[in-house]
Image (cartoon, rainbow, N blue to C red; front, side):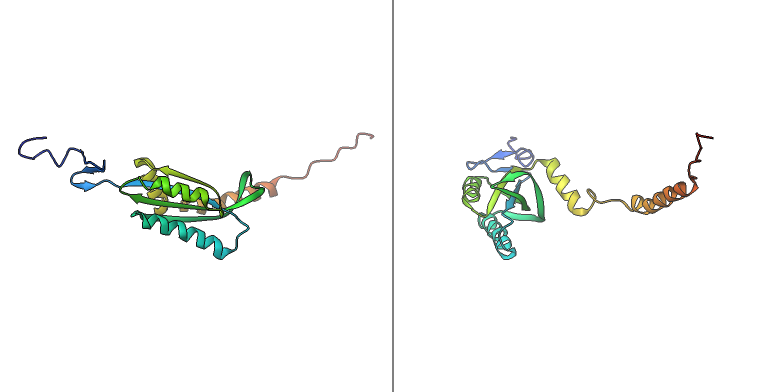
Length: 172
């Protein structure tokens, strides 16, 4: 740090609570929690479970960035004798991560959840999720969609031009 304070805004400063500041702005930590809800529950119970988790996240002072309900999907392997589950993904940002231990303990105790996973996102994960929400990732471009019918039509024409094989009598 410089005596005049010219360089203080450009250097990261750790406070007693270990919250990182840069350019006098608080740097938020981004997380993503994925969980699978038991498919036996009714639709209202599933939504109530997801809302309770969202309320717990916001109650801890975090801001929810995006909630993605993927829906009912086939599991790769059976979990508690179930072959399907309802998938949710919640992306959120918070200042400190001290409450995450208690949050994950509450997720473990929740009987409506089959599995969960909390991941801290790096800058690439944040950018990927942002691009995915904007539609830059995971959607087909218009060029591919418009050329797909032309390819199907060309294949049909090729099938029409192929003549039937000639039958040869071997006894004659």
